[in-house]
Image (cartoon, rainbow, N blue to C red; front, side):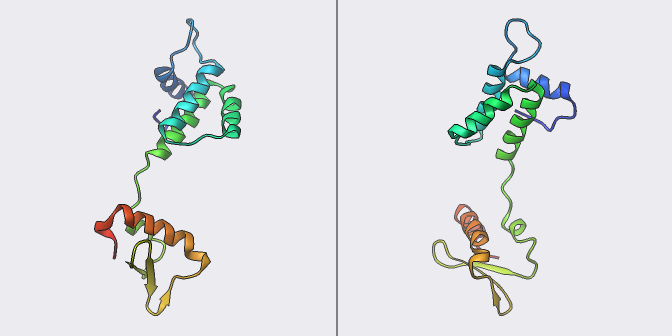
Length: 139
């Protein structure tokens, strides 16, 4: 699925390219919209639970253009470029990061250090980024 879409017609056209309308119809039915939505989730590597599928079934009852927009959002989010390490830290000017052992990330600004539960999630995100990008593991 593509996008962003500027018009309803553009969104419906994109949906029809992936899932053509059946029996000479000009719109997609709920089953076809469901295929469009589930297909976008599968292509994006999104694991679906029973309730997720129930919501997709509900969404599939709407117009094909609306389903195309939702599928396009899923697709674009999945293919968003990964931020650079510098972009992860853009909100923390003056902080320096360094990598210790496996899974250890240290951040400091002068004598201050990022520690504690408030920063655990951010440190984990940076550590995962560094594991995937060892060439840029420190700055």
